Length: 145
Image (cartoon, rainbow, N blue to C red; front, top):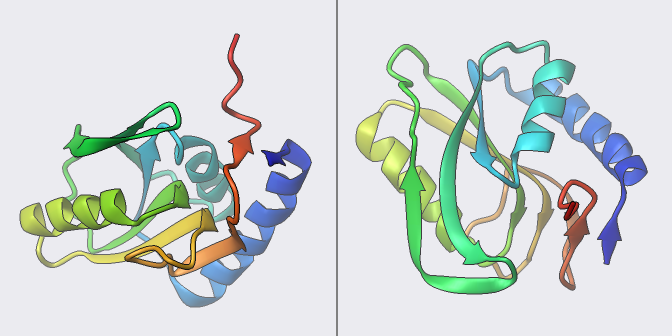
């Protein structure tokens, strides 16, 4: 399934409106690479200049790896409310590991999760989500040039 820019614009606006009514994050923390486009869109929509990133690797293209790497965690010591953003929660394993690592370093954080897509069978479901993924999603931002 191809996920287009036009669909993304509608979905990001819908998600931003829901977040605005329920949660006011100190930081938007995008998981690179998949969460970068959504993170930027939400930072603009929520008028939040605290857009940070971290890296998490659990896939090599479409192949799930046996390990989960989480690195480049920013200094979140001055913040309490984090909106953790990614493109999709598939199995949920990597998001659980990211949250575990964040809370290990900063136990006082309140973390809400936002993704465009989620799978119902995931071990963790996003607080903010738009679409259930029933097949592999090709995102418009994953352009191979």
